[in-house]
Length: 462
Image (cartoon, rainbow, N blue to C red):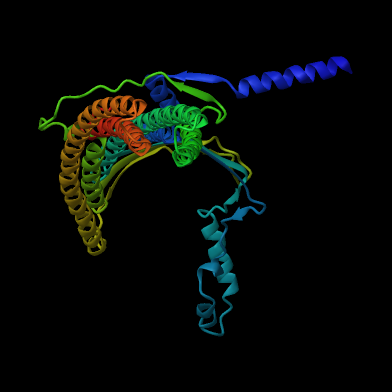
């Protein structure tokens, strides 16, 4: 029992260690893990496999279709092809024969004479069979085979662009989630640093108060401010846990995993004024829209092909056997044949004309959507440039403001220590310093997010 209890204790310790494992995560590792874990990307890859299979299936239509055919039959009752003379004469005609003459002997003589060249046939299909190989080859199908191949190939290309799109979206989500986690972590550290300032100030005031050199009201002000900051620290830590779990979900690890972000450097990009004209062509969204318009054009051609003549050839190599004729079982008969088929639609053009007009309207709509979205994507690129430049300016201003805030805090602390500044003024300076630090963190994360959005907008996020 002791060994079992010890084993169970060791197992719990291992589970706790695993649950509390720490992951040192760089931005590149975050992106790589996010791409591996993205369900949308996995689905896009499966769609490409499906499109490739459909493309291969359509290409097989160029080759002949060969099939083996075999059938067997067992007919319980034989077929008797013997005919009596009265069977060739309508019953009503027999009644209309002149009366007074016995026609039966005459009919018997005719039947005996007729039977010399009319041999009765008895056909037995007990165990008959038919087997053969057939070949079918379309020669012209209104262009539908060629159009179908083009559409399948285009569908495969669209699936590849869809994979690129899902990769870009996964990379964007990884960047945004990673830098949000870094930002919240910075704010937690800032809140704790601010709390430490207030704690030091509170201790200083308490020491002064003990020798009756300060009013009790000043100490209460600090304690109230200190309690508020403690609450903000708790809120920031809760936000850090939520952002950590969001990052865990993105990279596909357990929610209990502790993460240390190793990339926290923020660098500046020069101001961007304009782009070359091929930025839009790099966007998978635009390529997908272009391909959709092309697909609608091919669908229109395919619809036209449904109402064009079709030409095909077929050949069969076959045998039929197992027959028994008048108790004689001959060898299998060769029933091989070849044929050519021409089919020309005659009455379907009324309906076909309406369907072709509908397909033409779909093609025009797709082209209009392409033109509209081209303008919107260009606008999105220009907006991304503007947002990045604004974020760059905000970051520069926040960095300058922090220099003044640090200097102002040092001056205020020195002035307060020699009694040249009130406690209220010092608290105000500390609050401004904390706000300036927070604004710099926001400016950094905003710059990072605007930067990755800009790279996605010009198709260079990878």
